[in-house]
Amino acid sequence: MVKPVVIDFGWGDLHTALTKVPDSGFVNAPNAATQRKDLINQYVGAFRKVEAGTFDEAGRTLNDLNASISSSVVPGNRPALTTLVDAQIAKLSSQKV
Image (tube, rainbow, N blue to C red; front, side):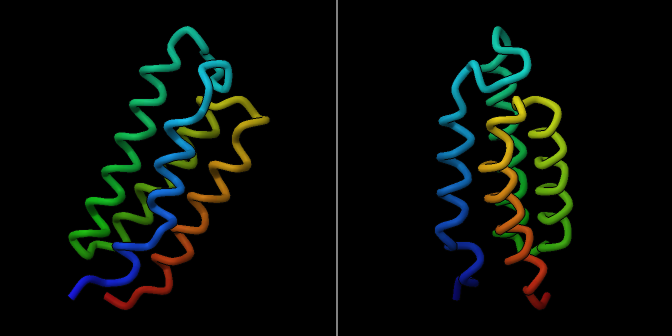
């Protein structure tokens, strides 16, 4: 059986939001592709930890993703992303290991 947190639609919403940040939405716009890839890699890392059932580690990885968003995404684009990340963190914190 699959835990609901693994198939939660929030993961897709977060992935879509990360991929749709425009180049101008990054602090270093000329390096946007690399920054976007780095954020998506952190997202994938967190999701893989959820699939493995290591929810605490996944939560830490999502906190790291929030920190990366804060340092690489311009302030106007941050709230939507951090809201999605925070929602996934909240769902993970309610999981029993």
